[in-house]
Each structure stands twice: as structure tokens, then as C-alpha cells.
Image (cartoon, rainbow, N blue to C red; front, side):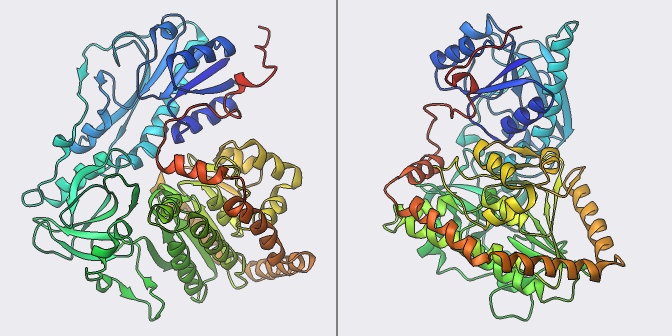
Length: 579
């Protein structure tokens, strides 16, 4: 069928649905919901047999839903309605939630139900629930709804009861640091994570807070900032403390807390004492993943059965210059450990998305140079990637549990093996960010795996990859099913088997020989120099496309048009195929 995806943005759910529906043979085109007239034009051009709206912030106009079947993806169970459905569910701590696919009508979230899928809730950030449970449930529900529509013999039923919940306001989210428990504070910040955040104060100054994590060891006077660690600040509650990872100050952008309040944070004592020192002087701390206490740490390491596991959980997968340097130091340290296999685990929701656009944007907002910070950041990413490529004494695995994009995909491909969790979405390309050329040795790593023709297509087409598609294109080496915990268990089982394989020594010898042959054919330094010459033009050249695109991305500017590689119906010469 011809299916039009009408969406506010090309977010992770929309990408997943595009990939799933395309793989099933449907003809998909996408239009951003910019204005009624734009949506009406898209419908007239594409003549869809079905319209699916995975992510909208306003109602579909009557001029469309009265003439075409429009299926709305609502992040709530059958009968639930309202723009803050998921926020209320997280803040109230409900045990089960769901996704409903319903038909658009005049009354919001009240149309006949075409499909629904429920799931158990986790006490985590809204963004994590959305990228995992909501996306999985929505994908299953939309596919079922499409099948039912195709069959022609399904009659959707209206919910017996409707429970409309209003837009959650900041008054509903407000934190009282003198009476709220750690669990209450976490629930409020988790429910607002991603957007809009919780209006609060730090150091007596107004801001919106995001990205919270419990701390059970350190305590202090409720409401006071009692410690800092890397990018996060620790604020005491009545029964513990909460790490605040990111904040947005009035008129500013979302930033790591210690950067947004750099001057004030410099006066706060570091919380390194909670970590177990690894005996190094480079600031890298060795921490077992399942610590007996709750705390926050963006880099952690553990060992088991001759395998080392390096975790790095950076907010939204963005990696600043400093974070890249810290991770490189951690990787170098891990490579010196007595392990045969080294697994880079990334984080639960993201593996890596490459350079940190918000930190780069902040450089220009604070009187510095965004071009310079971009240059520093991409070189730090290259140093980190080179550190992974140059691992002659271990087999390395990138265990990609969460989404990855741009340079993060090629950092993963720098490992000897890439294992991707079924459900993760990869975007191994750069051009969507103002026609960036990209680095991270992609011009060596990608053609080496998929061939020059496929590499060119991947970079040109700029489309997301499901785990299955990544495996089929040989970008990855394995697809592992299950949720994040099942994935982690499977990774550990496979990594242990790899470390104890009777042919391990020969595999390592073959790896070294292949790397030496590649180096003799063309040194890694040459690939890097060529890539950075192009990146220098992106950062410092006459074409400001990258800087404009980065600015609009960071500022969350409303889209004024749909990119042409998504809106196929707007291609020159587009014609509706004959029925």
C-alpha cells in the first residue's frame, strides 16, 4: 500500500515505523506536520491509501481525516486520552501502560481503536520508556492495524470508557526539596525528561532540570548541592540525594549541569570517593557495573571470564571533546587489562551519536568559536576511534543495545565485531547535519565492510537501519533479540565463548595480519587527513550549512519543510503508480 507518515519530526519511532513498513513492501513517504495546507498538499500528491501519524503535537485537520483513514499512535492504553498521558503515568508510578492506534475524528483520542499493545512500566526517564517500550509497542500495534486495514474485514470498536487527562503543567511537576523523597523527585524529573523538564532552581538561579539518577550513599541538607562528578551535580533530598545531569537556563540550551553552571560548580566538592580507584592518575575510575549502592557514573567497567566490559552512558548519545578524551583514556586502560575480549557496551538507550552538538553550540553562545569546538570534538572522536582500531591484543566487540548515529556508528564499526540488539536503530551517515562529510575513519571502515558501491548508497540515501537491515547489509555481524537485560546476558555469554574459543590465538593473529596489510596499502593517517580536510571546509569554509543545521537542531526549531529524501511525493516527476 501507499502509506503516508504524517509526523511532527523524524524521531526514533517514525524511523522505526518507516523501516518496518518498508521492509514489508509498503510504499512509504513522509511529510512533516508544518501546516494544514502543507499536509493537504502532501495527501493530494501522494494519494495515500492510509495515513499513519506516529508523532503529532496537534490534531489532523478535518479536511484530511474526513476523507482518508488516519491512524493516530497514542502513547496510552485504550480509553486514555490527553497530551501528557505518558508524563502522568510515569509521575504516578503506574505498573502497566500501553500504546493505542486509533482512528482520527473530531474528538481528540476518542476514535475507534484499530490496535493496542500494553507493557509493564519501568521507573526510568520518559525518553527511555518512549525509545524502548513505547516504540516496541507502537511498532507492533501499527503493523497489526495495517494488517487489519488490508484485510478489509476488521471493524474497529470505540472504547467503552474515556479518561481524559489534561496537559501536565509545571505546577504539577514542582519539586519541594524539603518534603519530597528521592523517589518522588526522580518520578517528577523522569516524567519531564526530554521535554519540557522540571522548572526549578540551582544555586538560587532558575532553570529546567533533566536527566536524574538516585544516590544512596552521600547525604546532606535537603535542597543543597553537595557534590559534583564530571557533568552532574548532586542535590540532597530528605532521604538521600539525586544527581542532576542536565539543565536548561532561561534563554539558553540544554547542557550538562556542570557546564551550564560552570562557575558555581567549580566551588562544589567532587564525589570521586564513591568510586574504587583503578590505580591510575588519569582520572579514570574502575567501577563494577552492579554496584551495591545507587549512584551515577557515565563510564564504568567490569570483568568476567577473561572479558572486559566498558560501559559509557552519555545523555542522548552525545559525546563532547572531554567525554571522548575520558572514554579514550578508559579504553586505553581497559586494553592493558589481562582480558582476551573487550566489549564496548555503550548505554541502554544510546550507544553513541558522535560529536556533542549542544556543547559545540554553547561555545558560540558564550563568546567562543563553534568551528573550533567542532574541530576539537571531531579530532577527539578520531583519537577514540583510532584507539579502538589499534587493539592488537584483544578481540573487540561493539555491543549496540541502544540507537546509534553518525560518528557513533563508525566508532562501533571500528571494533572487530558489531552485535546489535533487535529494536535498535542505526543511522550511519552524516549529511543530514548540514551536509557534513564525516570522519571517524568511515572512509576506511565502511567500504572495507560493505564495498564501495554500498558504502556510497548508505551515505547518499541517509535512511535508518534496523538491526535486521544492518545485518543484511553486513554493516553488523549479529542481531540479538530481547530487551536490554536479555541482550546484555546474551552478549556476556557470546563474549565468554569467544574468549575461550580454541582458535582464539589464530583469530588474533589473523586480525593483526589484516590490519598490517591494510596499513601498508593505505595508512590510517591518510584516511584521517582526507576526511579532516573535508571537515575543515564544513567547519571553517564559506558554506555555513553545518552551522545553520546545528543551530536549528539544538534550538529545536520548528521544521519549515520536509527533507526531500523523506518526502518522496515531492520528487520532480513523481507520479502515483497505476493501481
